[in-house]
Length: 229
Image (cartoon, rainbow, N blue to C red; front, side, top):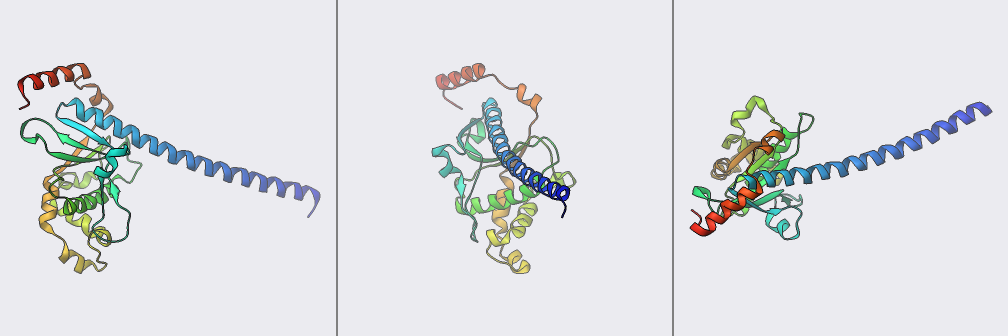
């Protein structure tokens, strides 16, 4: 190899090493940005929910005392327990005192796997309900972009829950064979989960049209003086 070829070879190696380091750095930053975006989404979702005056989103992951309340085990398999992003209690009217758990997706376009993530979410809700049915009153999926539009009207159906359980059968049922797993699905639990599902699609402008903190304070004061109904 000539001198000029050696220089080119060494320069190429140096550039490859540099680009590799930068690629790793960018990947790390991308992960950090994703976590930050997730935290921002949870904060915005909490703020919007509470602005309705019908929600007390008192558990926010990863707050120290919230994590335990938001975490549930898979019904089978060896996967680590999963946790929701938000939780708390609904207020006033027929929903007074009912608990909720929410998964928040801070997505603003279709460049994601939201459809597949929702399927996994349904499987998680099935497991959470089996684990603690008395506390799983409502399951919310909060996002800033619609998804799975070809079956949008069926996303909260018992059939979708059943299919999600079947899709994740190793962790929901501990059964590998599809036909056997299908026969083992608890359809009563699927129906119960479906009845508790909410899909909430927000937008930045929608977040502006909310009750201010000042006016929420007046409502809380009124409730305190009159007794919450």
